[in-house]
Amino acid sequence: MDYYQEITLIDQAEISPYVIWSKLYQQLHIALAEIKDANNKVNIGVSFPQYIYEEKTDHQKSKVNLGKKLRLFSQSENALEQLNIRKWLERLVDYVHVSSIREVPENKVTGYAIYKRKQFKTNAERLARHRVKRGDIGFDEALARYSHVVKTTNLPYIDMLSLSTSDEQDKKRFKLFIEKKPAEKSETQVFSTYGLSSEASVPEF
View 1 (tube, rainbow, N blue to C red):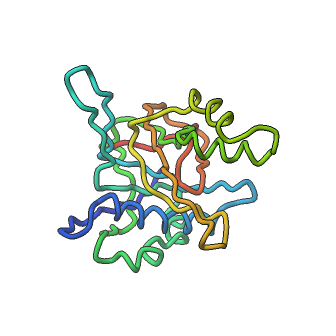
View 2 (cartoon, rainbow, N blue to C red; view 1 turned 90 degrees about the vertical axis):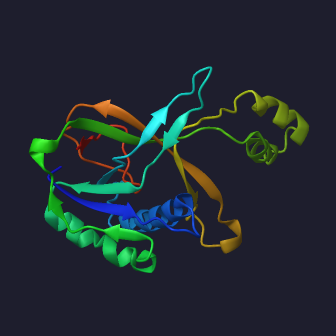
């Protein structure tokens, strides 16, 4: 990845960073979906330079934070120009600052990381309702079955709105959990429409 653009959340007295992240990432997801290929993949990846995730110990709480910066990476300057993220974030001009497109500073790169989406079965009631639709068992039995498969996580997340339906009533909120893993420099540079990947790495600096 040779080029990047940095988005910084601007501190607000009346609105929390979580709300800004939600609005920012919703727009980024829509923007990336506009340029996806036939396999729902894009050539632009993201990183969270201030990402912190430290599991809690017996005496301490978990340290979990996405920070206030997001970087967009691409192999070419042209790809970031075509994305034109400023246009997509026009309504958030008071909440985020978008840098110009810059070359990745090779002499400052300290390593590489993968930022991937981590999906969890976190809602037993939702799973049970879904199972009941098959018509062969009741809700209570379904709930009992699914209660043991539900997992909880402290990973950093962004609140998102599902765009898979055009019906406003049916749009569901979900948590986009993001996991960071150290990695080697990768040959593949293919990402989802969230800018995340389980294989492609981005530079850290």
